[in-house]
Structures are given as C-alpha cells and as structure tokens.
Image (cartoon, rainbow, N blue to C red; front, side, top):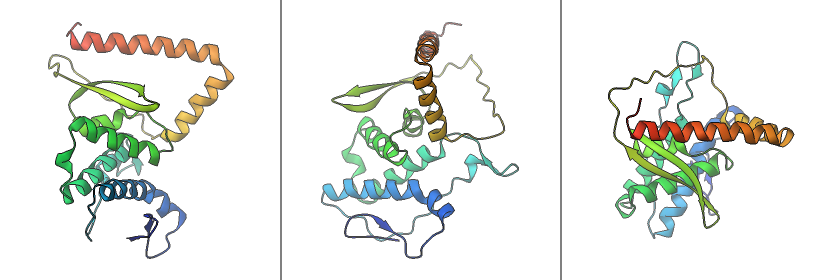
Length: 204
C-alpha cells in the first residue's frame, strides 16, 4: 500500500469486502498516526509491517476470544510508528493513551469506553473512568497494586460479540425503555464503584 496525496491508505491490489473489513482498523490507525507524525514535521519511512493477532483467536473454534485485539493492534501499531520516527519519547504515557484512545474511537465509529485501549497501554490492574473534558471524551486511568490474595477466573462464553453491534443494541434498549435503562445503569455503576473501592482497600 501507499499513502495518497490526501493522506489515505491506497492498497495496490483491490481487496474483496471481507479483506477490507479486516484491514479497516489498520487503515484508520495508520492514517491517523501518519497525520500526527506529519504535524510534527516527520515522515514514516518505507517499511514492512507485519501484524499477527492469532493469540486473540481460538484455532479450534475459529472464533475470537473477545479480549480486545483491535485495541491491542491500535496501541502496538501507533507506538511502533511513533517510535520509528523518534516521536514516542515526546509523549507521556497518559498523552499516548489519549492519542491511541481517540484513534481507536475513530476506527470504531466513536463507540466503546476505551478501557481495552487503557489495558493495552498500561497493563496490570487499573481503575478506569470515562469522562468528558472540553467536549472531548477521555479515559482516566489509575494504576492499582495487584491484590495477590484474590483469584480472578475469566470465563469464555464460547462465542464472540461485535462491540459495535452490542453498543447499538444497548442504545436501542435505552431509547425503547429509558426508565429501565437508567435503573440498570445506576445499579451497575454502584456495583462497579463499590468493587473498585473494595479492591483498592483489599476489603473482602
């Protein structure tokens, strides 16, 4: 592929619809990273880019686990491109998260909380809250000490769910049953806040 005058990725050979859907995130991440790099008077040099997210998929069931492969790819590719142009050191970890967060939201049509991006940037244990600052959404990340005495057991349902489809379903429910939606969200918020406090205080 190459970059056109308009800054958009142009693939040398026309790809089928399925392939283009798989390349959607790559295309947006590369274009947005290139835009940032150009604003700093730098340029991405010709390179071979290989992306492998096989570990996010079940080989047996030919299905993704749902661990946030798009967020991990967004963070990895953005960091690699900034590193290749010696720009990564100019950004704090928090600022880099904001960059990756906004790029990921654009690639995902402004959907998602960004918590999977935060996990990919910071790793380990975090408390996370989505807020709005100057009309722009931003995620607030606070690293927490690992509670070694508590065991976490992830359970996979055996099938994946599209984030975009899931968010659309939630929005539809919000419009059709606003009172029930507000009640459920209020209960979930209280549960989440209580869980964060209990984890920080190591309160069983």
